[in-house]
Length: 277
Image (cartoon, rainbow, N blue to C red):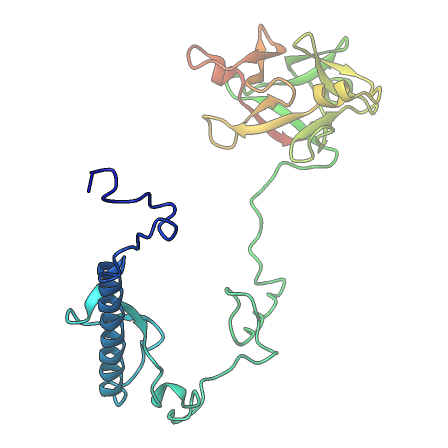
């Protein structure tokens, strides 16, 4: 038989009389492998059940977590253990007493105490500490220089100067002011004269002027007290020009930037004393 006729075309085996070899079924090796894998899986499941049954009598605090079988289990399978009888018991059954539950009257704030603290008794008038002494707020304050203690602020020709005050009533009235809450900041000071006008800075010079109701006027007429180098004295800083303080230069009251040298601190320190009028 020639080589061409030894094996008919395989697309028409039955028409040519040729039949495939059935002594060996195709895929036999794969079937064996599948069977071996199935057998290993069954063995692993049986082993896992046996291990879980042996551990059923132990406390199952971690029974809900997945546990890995021992190294003898094939394939490194992971299984979830069955909860034991102890795990299914009613919570709190084995406790001597139930855990306390928060009542509706308890405060939910973490910083609040469980019981309200009693309020401290209100101090009586005699127990109260007297506040620190302040300059008088009504008629009768005058402003005296620290380095020229015989000179006071005095309004003359609309400007504020540092003058020696005689015994005349007019001079003493011109050197007497009222200290009121600051027009631009209530924690600071404003100063009024006997005729109801205010002391304000204009072009950095302290003058007497009437209130025009503007925001600029309120700021120009407001000065904040700052500690001075001399005990009992203050320095007056401008609200709208922070860093500038009222000081006398050639006995004229001005608003100048703060200086660490020279006579600035002495020139800018004043004492608020009782009125001269």
